[in-house]
Image (cartoon, rainbow, N blue to C red; front, side):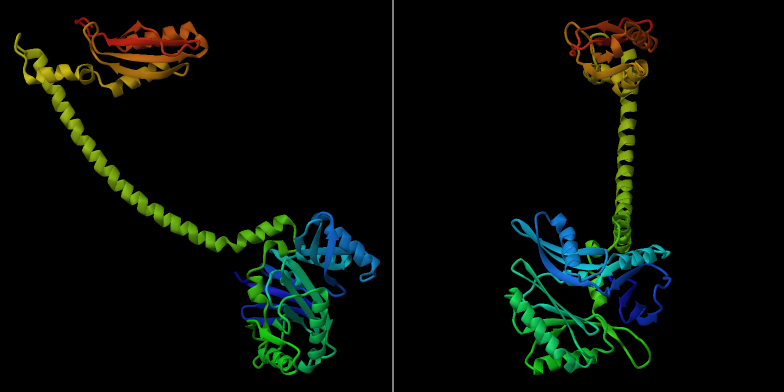
Length: 430
């Protein structure tokens, strides 16, 4: 996703790219909205270095090397852009800048009202990845060459003495020589070409053409995006496409700010996904509502049939003639206890009697046999085996009209119990 705006900071000035326009700014401006700031640090050192030991120690080794060689005066801050591990060492692409300059950029970014993240220019090289053709990135008169081949990184740099197309022939030839001496085994005499900022696309096309005509390099110009500067000029840059793919690791910011930037980067895709899920849930709810409605109608029909059956059973029980059993009586006997006493209602009765101190494990309706009528069997456990709570449970069942008969429980734990429950019908033996 391309950023809404980005800044390019070079030794020549500060440039803002936003809304299809490029605007030159004063140094250290106050920004509106989120921004990525690509910085071509002045007086910096960019390179690829082999570092012994763990990859985590590479920055310290690079800092020591840069200071000992006197490339940068005073304290140094090292950006690690990319690392490739080997058996007992690692290869690191880095940028080393004066510490005070980096602290100045940090303080400026912290003063902005919205997220402002700094991206060192050399980190754009690391986003390129491996390929047979090296990349040459032009930043004004400075040229950066970078490539990855067979698990190794290669970097070289050179500067042109002028800004005309012909002034870049010798520096490009120098880059090709440096890469070859460093061990580059990829394509020779060919490269991809990109510009951080050029006054016009025609300028880059002419430069690439002259390199080919001079027999120095067959360069392929990468896609650039044009911005309006005024009515006659349309500068171009390769940065928007690259910044749209930049990884979070390339952002020179604390982890919390990186996470905040990443969350904003994906807020629109996430919002779209949530909208799709919401529509799906709405359709599911509509379908489920229809299914529930049909199920309710079916249950109402079954309830009506059950009420009719109960009425017929009650009528037969009061008017049946001895020695003659109507079919309704036979069916009522087969249904037995379950028709007269609703198991669902019985479950509610047992739960009310149990309260919070008695845990019901099983409620079962047993079939009638030669010695016993159909009965409910309840198994449970009393918390802490309290006999008082068990007595309260049995008293509550008696108050509901049920007589308990003790039996052996299935559970052998402390406080376990089992009872057969029979309804106490007034005026009739259970």
